Image 1: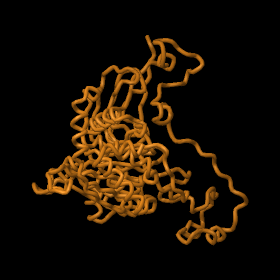
Image 2: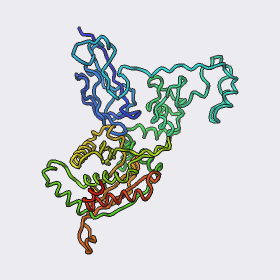
Image 3: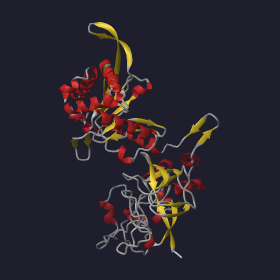
Length: 470
């Protein structure tokens, strides 16, 4: 009889230090037999919905979390019954590889090996000859509690200075809670020193904070706030519906607030007669070369932005506050704002400046389809250098877009409208669009921004200008 064992799969860090994810759906059930890398679940991070592949080949024995549950990284979510180490090696079925008896299939780039348990063991610090109790107090910041607050009669040796224990660390120096849990505790007025952690190595979880609050140790108002935080949905009679702020919408809100209050925004507007560009678009759609390709006004605007950046590279940059440097990119990862059922996302097309118009149209179609289906991966949402938001699809003419964090500029393209316009000395009905450019005034001055916007407008008003600008 083949020996088996139970393996737990813990929620991995899906990228960029994310601390939690929501279980969206399970693709398997208890008793199902799964293969290595078979998709077993969909989870929503702060940026996107991600498919989780199975790290094992075996039988599902337990699903530890239900859809809709927010799970902290490192917490078990599913258990497998698998063959022993010799029979569970990746590669040929049943072939044991002696040199690698302990290796298990792992999610590449998703974190540590699955069977790893606990936290890395830190080397215990050793202290030199203990100083008198008063000495450390005099050299620490005023916020540190005086040493004499420790019971004077204790005979236990002092291994660590008093100030090394804080609401964020346990006596061993390991984190006692994650940033979201500390934020929740702060909002509720909970002192984490009074909360017992039930997570790995004493980690304090949301449930621990909620249980502490529910025990009556806080005022009633704080207990109500805790109930609102932990309830999946709460209705006030039939007149209100409350939805927890989480996932993509939570991340987007934080990013937009950070951008609005960090980068000094300037917005400029330009209204352009885009009739020649729309006529070109109509001819391209009829061309055999573009058969089967989706061409829209966004396609031409995106190409105009890429061409205009060649003469105005200062708008393809970011402000590095930590190093006090301006970082100018020699490539363009073009972000396209996309409205999805889960909130606004800004996936980007990598190296868009190297694409032909046909390739750009294909990339735009794939990007928007993936975003609307909620299939955009974290790598597609990071690394953008400049963005476009198409508010014209909603019938809006102009706006003041907020910069995507880390970028110097964002262009909003308005609706194309037939408008009475001066044309060749007469008033004619022309197709007109308003462009709105917001830029970070730390990086881009008014002249740079104006030249860039005027360059885009010139290309849309007369597409033949592309020959002069490239």
